[in-house]
Image (cartoon, rainbow, N blue to C red; front, side):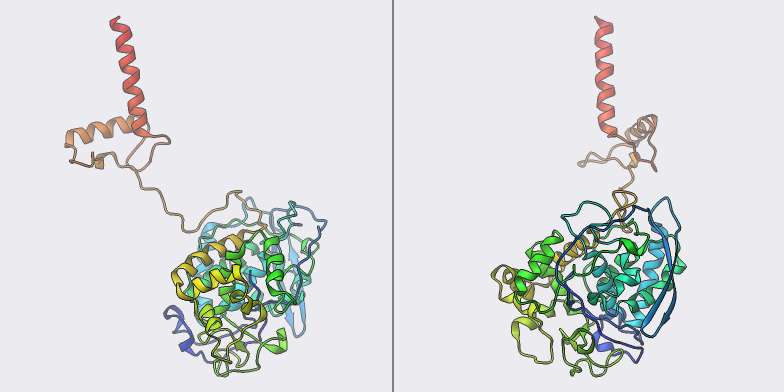
Length: 417
């Protein structure tokens, strides 16, 4: 979860030059935050809470400077419906095409997961991806300034699909935003359980700071607490290729640059990269080259090329985008699972490839095609064990055949004797 800063953005004409081909045709934007580091320090303490499977929380009212919530519990047998998650993913893709809210959706997922403390075993006291960021008390944390706007964007999707948890929806939106911005496919799993009440939210102070006295030590303190390593810290930092920082909200960045004065969205802020709605390895290239004063470099960005351990990975990613994409995808997936309680316990994938069906009639030795008579015989034996062309056997078919032959040979030997 490298940190993520707030920026105020409203609907306006899109500048399609910023976008990957998959989203360059969209025309409007309404989001208020971009990737940046938040002002908080790493600390943790247990919260008293009770375990609850999941709940449905509806956002009732938004008004200037104030948020109103009404929560209704709705227990379910499983955390989320795979079918509804797939449909929600398509709706998120459409949202991204019209709102260009990639940065704030990434930030939302990261900040929900990034409160995890590996030293606390109990759920939900350990924090992590549990949907807690939907509650006003956590939205008011300094690190989460502006994330209420991400919630406003996703709430209609949550209302449309009642069999989804907020925890799954936040992580689905974050991963989809990376992919739709031109980034790698994230190997996600779902089934996260929501906390049920604001009293179960983590205390403030678990997210990274943008300008600590010792940037390298601070990053390690925060991310090691989550169970992440140096490579994952640097890889996740690369997501700053998306978004901008606004000084009036985060205290960092210029009010406007040549890359942000025309949007998309409300003009202003300072981006880390020139094409700040495209996911690539520009972040590392631009920090290394240090030739454009209009691009933002925070202390926690610069340290990636100053600290010897961080520099090894930053240098690699600056010249090898494939390596960056591979490591980023793995780190993002790991981050999205931190602290989560899954139902079913092993979670589930929306893109799991189905095992190839065993069709006995297609069996071949690999050297020569079997005769039709042999195929029919194998098929008959296969179905005799309970298999069929459309239903693989629960155990190894050929092992069963060998066992039967061995048993027949033993019986024959005993009879003969």
